[in-house]
Length: 495
Figure 1: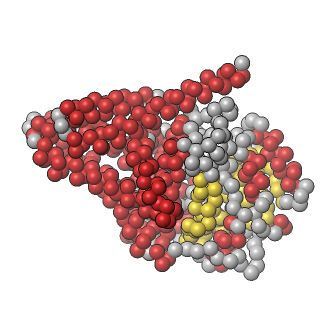
Figure 2: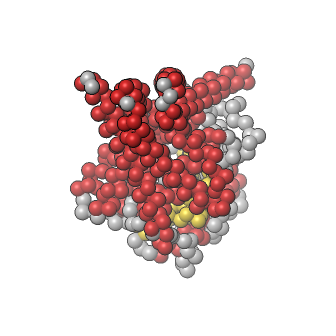
């Protein structure tokens, strides 16, 4: 074996082992979730003395969904005199007039609702929340993003947990209004279900740190203040504040049985934009807080889980490295003898793949009960799309590591709820950049790799190669088709 071949195999196996460790962590999440099932948090009746609650609705150019959001918030079952609603609108388009009209409509019905507009987006969402908090009168703060629908019972089922003075935040589970809209929304729903059910559930039940998700949660105002308030030096202000608050000793509660429906992005470029923001923000938060966590006197179990949580997105650059090295490593291993490939490479791939499969299958079983086998058909797409996102998210991770600043890019929302709803002629759209072209190159690369494996009868590797190929090509073609096609449709409409 030449030095070059040795180096290629060395980097290949090192990358595969690190990714396998991240995959093994998913087994740990499943274990923690079921090991501590007796600690599952349940809704509690509201306290005898109902506190004043402020509902904050941060907006930026949300003309299609703002009415739905405000309508749902005003249907929350809570005394009007104890409910303050802030529409925090940083919009620069027609959303301003729509939001003002909604506020005026409900103020006439006796709601304590206010329209608050800033002239600039300083601090983006974190800045808007902080600006509103300075004027808020509530002891507790309930936050909803524009793509959400507030469940009427949310305060009835969450406020009772704050009878414990050590509880700083209660997060409810996200539901999916348009889960059945397309393959892309089905995949996203599975990904989010795994995050909420097993990650939040496992972490919360076992006493580890978990995070507020930016929406669908109630904060104790004193916890926000004690943790240092909303800060905008990362793109994930929710993750940042969550860790700072828990490091101060505040405990969080995850209510799996209370669901707040939300609209999933129907456009690949919008989905990528959202994922880019989450990945970049988590790495920024990792750089900011992980050294402090590791240097603290927190229990080792919390330190270890926080490390896995905050470094999870480092797997995406490693996926790119693995993708590039797979072909030469396969050729080298094949020339050495297929036996070694079968007993080393394939088991490692199967181990990593099975961890993802078991993770998401368990989440679907928890949600759908006996109907969970109907969700099996989406698993290959979940695996492939997760791989296809690696270029987009690796870009986010590298930007964060290099300290490259970027603005808080909102996810376009179109009020798409059913299969017949069309979004292509609506104004907003996700941004199109160079990422799909890199994905196309990687898709072509794996097509050549698949041909080589088939022609040399290395059939054991073909399922994995095809997962990578489909993932990259699906992400690339859907981005280009939806991005370019939407621009053409909008131009025709304007003409």
